[in-house]
Figure 1 (cartoon, one colour):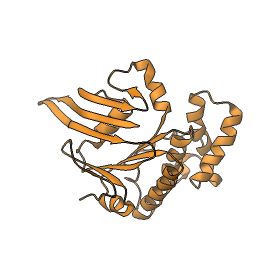
Figure 2 (cartoon, one colour):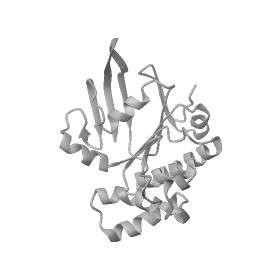
Figure 3 (cartoon, helix red, strand yellow):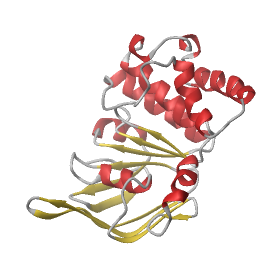
Length: 228
């Protein structure tokens, strides 16, 4: 599913080149639930951007769902992204659209038939506990509800891979726990789940595989791992 081989990424700054990640290697198989952890600035966001092909690594190899991300052409990027769902910390909901329309938008982009949209969107809203919020706009929702809309939108096209970048960063501890158990349920249905986070308590409570990053380097990788 996901393979990083000796991946390094540097950014140009006023002080010269800054190394974001250095020689990162790991493999995530189909159906896994994996946390990629580390403090702010450790390299998690860089890994996310590399996975969704917003950035191209300076060296190494990245393979996701059969795509070679360092060698792929720009016209192939939409096909890569259709195989994954992405949840951002800031939700990226469209404020003028209703909850239903925000989720349906992801299906319209790929040309899904209207009948399929009408059937699929209510199912996803029910899955994330928002069936009664279909006709409200995002500003009328709590932060936790907005995050669940973003999750429904990420999952509506039935991706094989879900990537979540700090998905609980704006939520209180109770809602964070609820979000994690919802992601666990989604993983149990067969979706590979990769979560970038720095929240130690949440990671330790879930007892999943943890890949820990520090200063751009993988320092540990283990099933049932804990964030130190």
